[in-house]
Amino acid sequence: MSEALLSVRDLCVEFTTYNQTTKVLKGVNLDIPAHSQIALVGESGSGKSVTMKAIMGLLRQPPARITSGQIFYDGRDLLTMPDRDRVALRGTAMSMIFQDPMTSLNPVFTIGDQMGTILKYADRRLGRARNGRERKARVLEVLGQVRMRDPERVFQSYPIMLSGGMRQRVLIAMALLSEPKLLIADEPGTALDVTTQAQILKLLKDLVVERGLALLMITHNLGVVRETCSYVYVMNKGVVVEHSSTADLFAAPKEDYTKALIGAVPRLTGGTRFGSAEAAT
Image (cartoon, rainbow, N blue to C red):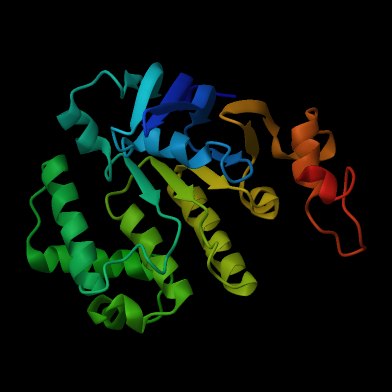
């Protein structure tokens, strides 16, 4: 793989609750080159979301604690830079699409208010001067880019007035407002029906390719991986157990755990690949 935009090295995280300490990440390593589409997969509890939150600086400390490791973004170690500098990168150079479109938006503010506030703070961090009218124009522009049919109506709407698919498009638009280089998507489309999910994933892939972004897709859905990503990291119990190109992973997985993940996917012809679904649990 080419030189990484984001590089995680030997990342270890532990949680302490009720005087008991649990090691959740046990030396995670991964690289996200610029302009790449990378997946981080594994069953629930494998450490995917904790890895993502550590990268974004969203771990609640305590109970979480990063005990060792390095996270490099564009050559700078995020874990040693001043907090102010790291916060300035979040939402500008690195953006995130959160998991559940039904609960990730504030129900008491309009979409325009929420997106305008995000853009206002991003502009402040980047040293940009933009008035309210210019911010609205930018928000409407990005809503149009995520293929909203009536951006003005969406701008004036409250989240409850939008469908699940429209809310997911709003979350994607929020992440793109400040033109980041790295986009982290945590289970996008999980709460949506299959047809809408397929539309959202195609939109996301198109936007990433068109804008030349790096994408880190956090998911347990191997069908999503096959459609959107060219390289895969497989996590199990807090470590990366296998990584390869998507084509190689599906053609010839090396680890039993990876075979079990693929084998757990139902097939239209009946049964599963690499053994039964029961063997994967």
